[in-house]
Length: 280
Image (cartoon, rainbow, N blue to C red; front, side):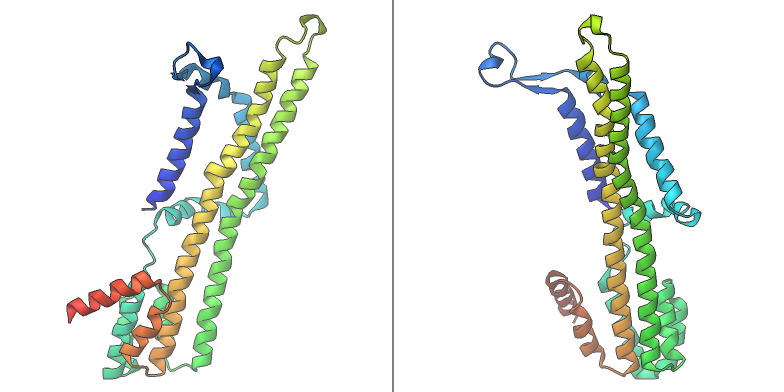
């Protein structure tokens, strides 16, 4: 579970709501006032149904207009991918590849076919079968690297959906502000002396607030997390490619492990080394 995303979004919303109702009274002008005051009724100053309708409705409409149905239908899947932060663990793939290398050295590449059928990862299974079928090493690498590039391009298309929403939401916040200002100016009565000007101006600016919140609290983090998941998956698949090519060339399992560990951070290497040492 991607707990940092949940904590961050909930924290941003709570801090915003607290800022709306919290008053900190310091300085000469605050004499006689409580140092900290809470005014829950202030939250109603930040609610406007028409503004919500304009910002959310127009943002969603433009996103729908900008992407094909196949991309839009994958939105629930995007959230599943974003929240699943532990799916791609490089050490899991390294251990599996070292095990495959040991099997290949003892029994030959054909013995890996049974291992391939046990794999749940289609890319890993395909990679194993390519060397089991005795394909040319250059062909194997080209096929696998092309698969990674195409996958990453699809992932970028998914992230760009939320980038689009993140850029459109503030724009329609400004549109809503303009709508509010136009209505405010059209309804101004010179005889009242502009007594309602401040209230009407505040209402007009609420749409800009909504647009900024949608862009930077909702859509922006989603796009960033999707790209992080993509980089994690690409790393694991690069490890698979390098490991499979080394197995095909008959590399020693111990040397293979050392090579693949160069793909992971130093802390992960040290943990792997101590784990391996403890098992000896």
